[in-house]
Length: 114
Image: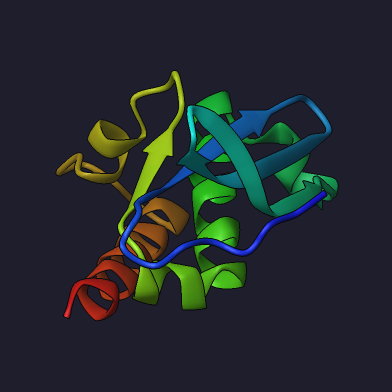
């Protein structure tokens, strides 16, 4: 069951990547338990299935940020993933979709933190 987040408490976004789908769950910790707030799932089609694992993970962050924009604007959100997404999106030799995603995330984070 999903719960309403309490203001003033940070949220955590857990990202999962598989061969055919990506998903994320937004949770808030209260009373030493994690309460789910929102769940996002995306079935990969066509070329998305051929993305390297790091690009699939970056796509998961982008899709989650798009769908959960009101939460990103109202709460501090920690992204939890076991892949180096931050380093990938800050590489100087990025091209194509990674550059586009990095710009979109920067814009979202700028909007969310002001």
